[in-house]
Image (cartoon, rainbow, N blue to C red; front, side, top):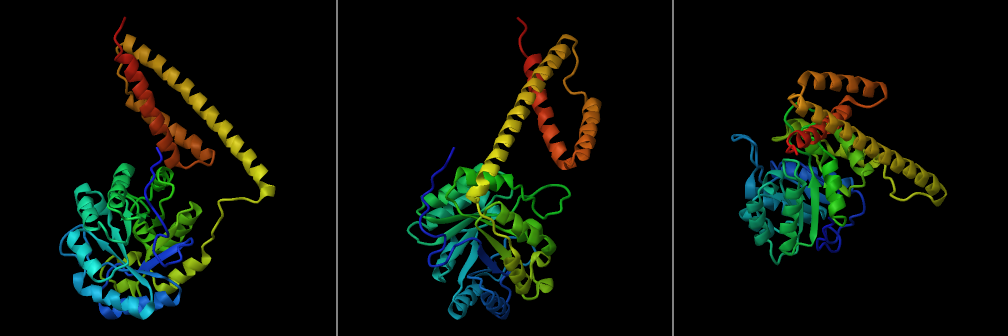
Amino acid sequence: MIINLNITGSLISGVDCNKPLIMAGPCSAETEEQVMAAARELAGIGVKIFRAGIWKPRTRPNAFEGVGSAGLPWLRRVKEETGMRVAIEVANVKHVYEALKNNIDVLWIGARTSANPFAVQEIADSLRGVDITVLVKNPVNPDVELWIGALERINAAGITHLGAIHRGFSDYGKSAYRNNPQWQIPIELRRRIPNLPIIVDPSHIAGKRDLIMDLCQTAMDLDFDGLIIESHCDPDNAWSDAAQQIVPQHLEYIIKNLILRSQDVDNKKSVTLEELRVQIDKLDDEVLRLMEQRMAVAEKIGQFKKENNVTILQSSRWDELLKQRINIGLSKGLSADFIQKVYTAIHEESIQHQKAIMNKNSK
């Protein structure tokens, strides 16, 4: 279902929001000198929006949790001396009031806060009647409905300069990333709310600076609207999240080397593209037809198991099948992760079909 939010004008009033919109600055505002040094360098490479953490909600206590309200005058100075707009995270009503009092231009709601509808509603209520840009990060867990709900609450409070930030999702287990990007979630958000600007946060997805360039390019290839990147003049000695911050010169390199692609194609090439899309559609139809046939066989297996009082799940058979399919997939240029996900989904659907047969009352 398509959702129509009341989003009007540019995302940030008075700022050219042509793609890609770049927001950058240190993870945490540490000292006035550090903030100003970063701001001057970032302004020098053309960044228009300076981000900095004032209050830092940390996973565990005793970590650096930000300088608090004492850092807000530093951001006022950034605005006065560089002309940049400034953006901070807010997690409660007190943060909102302090931010508004200090003329902050952009607020973002963090992943931990967006997962809590009560907290989001309190923030929304405190913003009624205020003309300001609000960005909502995805919740820590991959729940597009919860993300949409947070955006709807803020929009219902009258905020029309509204956008989303994709920062990835917590994922138990080993991963190349700090937070699993699960690109299908922001893609679904874009499908559901087509007019919503989506900014990608490669710093929090990556957790390591050497992955940031590739994530930035992926964000552009997927046609998202901008990037929010943590940039520090001395990242190795940063007071928080040192490994994922980059120096302004590295950010400048990334910006200059991004490849920006168009949604449209040259008319001379559009026929070829359309032909390829028709091929994809036909192949998808064939895949679904084969899935229908496979499930019909699964139902026959369910009937056999019912008549012979056999359990649905045969663990050794499933383990052997999965290994075989992964090996075949690898030989055809498909990744093991992809094959495992596809066949796990097929197996789960087969089990549901077998359960329906086995639990059906005999006539």
